[in-house]
Image 1 (cartoon, helix red, strand yellow):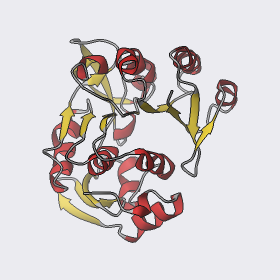
Image 2 (cartoon, one colour; image 1 turned 30 degrees about the horizontal axis):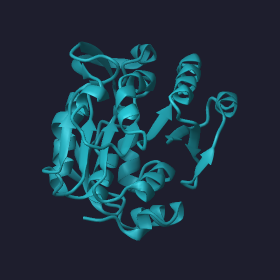
Image 3 (tube, one colour; image 1 turned 180 degrees about the vertical axis):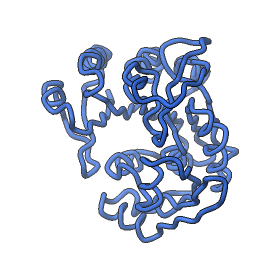
Image 4 (cartoon, one colour; image 1 turned 180 degrees about the horizontal axis):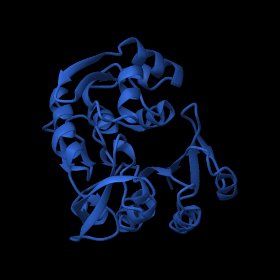
Amino acid sequence: MSLPDQLRNSRQSLEQHSSKRVVGVHYGEQRLLCRLLGEFLAFVDTRDLMLGPRLVTDGFWEAWVTLAIARYLQPGMWCVDVGANYGYYTLLMAAACGVDGRVVACEPNPLLAEQYLPQNLVLNGLHHGVEICPKVIGNVDDQVLEFVLHEGDFATSSLEPWAYAYRCATVRVPSMTLDRLCSNWPRMDLIKVDAEGAEGLVWEGMRQTLRRFPQTVVVLEVHLGRGPWQVQDLIRQMEADGFAPRAINYEGDIVDISLETIVEQPHEHWTLWLQK
């Protein structure tokens, strides 16, 4: 299964292609069946009031980030999706990388990891080519950590302290570093990280992997409003590790960006494209 040109050309073509094939069908058991990016069938949960409705009505999410990733992916690549959620980016990676590639989807929310992710992979015939890692990805191995869940918002569950004020429940989930997860990999091409404020912990736990595979691209969403000093320290660490910060602009292009610009616009949606 390859990606159509409409998902690589421009943001406009991606959004139009996705919107033309939008579908939303109630499937029982609090599930809605929708079509993502005009290509992939997926279930979302009716209790999810943030990401779910946008996937059902638009058929895409973060079109600029989707476009940048789709342009980069090639058959045979090895990728990790940290914070996979329903598997939106996982499906994109699996389709583009093909049978010679490898994709691991990391998702600690038990409902998503045990129900929605495997179902969505099966729906698209990709269940044999993707591994699901139902663990917290961070800076420690073999520990059980509290992971905060938010009612009505499956996309902002987190390890970080800011999340506790909004929690509806917590679950205890085993932890793993990407260094451990990928210790026997022969290559690494792309790591997408959406960890809702815990991206510094993820980075700390994958620095050995980045040294082993210096060509790796890291697509990382930062949450400056939740921890500005943490983000500044993280970006300085990235620079020390040889990754100059660049960002994905709203047309899906990779542009130079400075730490000062990021700090001066804390409410901007910053998704970094990190590549040596």
